[in-house]
Image (tube, rainbow, N blue to C red; front, side, top):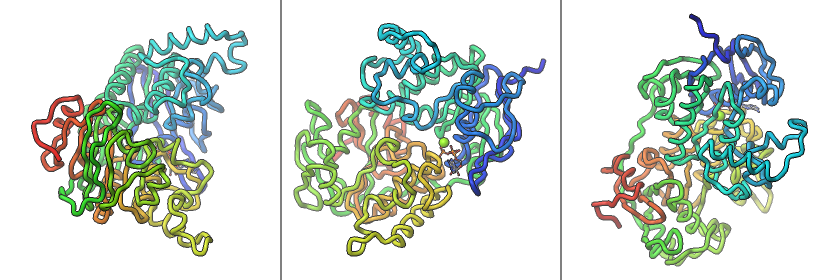
Length: 503
Ligand SMILES: Nc1ncnc2c1ncn2[C@@H]1O[C@H](COP(=O)(O)OP(=O)(O)OP(=O)(O)O)[C@@H](O)[C@H]1O
Ligand SMILES: [Mg+2]
C-alpha cells in the first residue's frame, strides 16, 4: 500500500536577486521518517526550511500536507498545518527580556491565540510540564539572555516539541549543544518518529545524520543532487555535498618557535588547580573539553574579557595583564567569540564592514576610511575562505549561517596580530570550508601563536599541533596531535587521567 507522505514539495524554487537559492526541489517525507538534509554552506538548506515554516515565500513550486496543497503564507499558517520548526538562528527564537517560563509558553502568551487571561501560576505550571517533557533542567525564572547558547537552543526545541508537531523541522539543532544534550535530543527525535511524526533534520555533523536518518538528501547549489538510504558511508555524503573530493584534513604537526604567550599559575575558575600554558609562534594549541569544562573561561582571561583568577601572563617576553578587551587588542591579541549571532554579527551591516571593523585604523589614512582598502580586504576574505553569497557590499544577513561564520573568523586572519584566540570557530561550517579555514589558520600561524577551543575532539585534531584537555575546570591531559586520537581525547574530556606527560 502506498503511504501518503505527511509533507511533499515539488518543483520548489527560490530566487534572491541573481541567486537561485533553490532550484526545482522535490522531496517527500513519510510518517515516522527522519529525512536528513545536508549541503555545504549556502547550498539552500535554511531557505527550504524557511519556506516550509512560512517565513519566506517561494518563487515557484508546490507544497502539500497529507496530499493537499497548502499555502504557507505566514508562520502561523505553517504551524496550523502541523509544521513546527527550530530555526538555525537560535536568538530569533527566544524573547530576551523574558524569563524561561515565558519563553517556553510563548504560544499561550501570544495575543489572539487563547483569549483567556493567563496567570503567572498557569504559565509556570505549563512551562514546568514542557521543560519536564523535554528533560530540560533550568530555573524557570531565569532571564533567557543570561543562559548559555546551548540552553537557549534547548528552550526553543522544548517549546517546539510541546506544540505536537506532525512535521518537525530542525535546522542545525545541535550546533551549540554538548554531547550529552545531543544524546537527549536524538532520543527525543527517535520517540517522535516512532509516534509517526515526519522529521526534517539539517546538520553539518555527518555522524549524527548517519545515526539518526532513514534517508539523506543532498543539496548543492540549490538543487537536490542525491538522496541516499542509510546506512551510507561518510565519504559518499561528503563527495555528493562538494561535488568532488575534500582536500586533506590532516597536517604536519609543528613544534613552534619562540614563545608568544607564557602563562603560569593560571586557573579557569577560583578553586580549580592551576595550570601553565606556553603558546609558541607557529603553533596551534587546541583546547578541548565538554561544554562547561572551562575553555571559554580560560580564553576570556587571556583576552581581558574576564579578570585573571590567578597567575601571571607575558606576551613576547613582556608582562601582559589586559584590563579589558581593548587593551588586549592593542597588545596584539585577537579573540573570536563563541556566539556568532550575539557578539559578532551586526544586522544591517555589509560584509565589507564586518571584515574591516576590528582594524579600522589599518584601512584609514589621516583619519579617513579608505573604501578601496576595505573592499580589497573584504574580497580577500571572500576568496580565501570561499564565502558564498552576493559579494562584499551585501548585507551580512543575506549570507547563509556558515558563510557568516567564515567572515567573522576570516577577518581576524587578515590583519596583524601576535596571538589569535578562537572559541568554537567551526560551528555551523561545512566540511570543505572547515578544511579551508584550518589550512588558512595554519598558514597564518607561521608568524603568530594560535589557541583554538572546541568541544569536538575531531575538529581540534584537524587543526592543532597539540591539545590541552580540560575537565571540570582542570587540565586532565595534554597530548601532541601527532599521537592523539579522538578516542583518547574523549577519555580525557570525561575526566580520565593522562598517562603521558605535558608541559
Ligand atoms: N535574504 C537573503 N537575501 C539574499 N540572498 C540570500 C538571502 N538568504 C539566503 N540567501 C542566499 O541563498 C543561498 C542559500 O542560503 P541558505 O541560508 O539557504 O544556505 P544553507 O544551506 O542554510 O547554508 P548554511 O550551512 O551556511 O546555513 C545563499 O547563497 C545565500 O547567500
Ligand atoms: Mg543554514
